[in-house]
Image 1 (tube, rainbow, N blue to C red):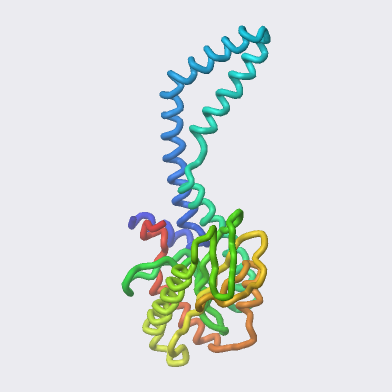
Image 2 (cartoon, rainbow, N blue to C red):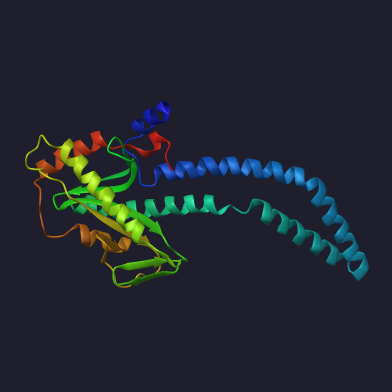
Length: 267
């Protein structure tokens, strides 16, 4: 773990989705190696079976090409079952993609909005550790941003209630609000030497990646739900809270406080 931490420091600050992408690459490599061994061993029985059935099919129909076609399709079907990625692995890849795409959008906020964005961090030592996908620090405030990849999901919003595939998302919103509160308290303590920073209030945002999400931005139980395209305008509000010097103090405090998620081995 210490080796991973040193490597992360040499490579610069963590990138959006870096730990999830690393976890996906590692798990995919282990899974594909296991699948190859399984395919090779299982071929001892399904290979001869498909050959035998293909011969019978070609002989009984008097069309040898039908037997060849059956062999090709049968082999393809078996390999598809053997090498189809498990849902857990697909979800890790989708989460990594969502974080990475959100990070690309936030890059524009860094360039044009005089903001600094910290990605792929963990807050430890303040109660239960939790992940910080993206933390935006700018003269306009501090924003904790979580990403969700909800393509092909059934997402419905009724007032301040959201259902995803018929599951109420209220517990997730409450968790994000609590994490934003804990992060604000930690940053307030870490940047206490700069009186201008004062009490840090962190605003939680949820960036939803999907084809259409009408009615956003919308406040859902204290969390602003929006699409990645709406992030820039939301984060570049006209209200200025801190000077550039105070923001610099806050950035230094956040870098001291938050550790790289990859160095902790969390997923």
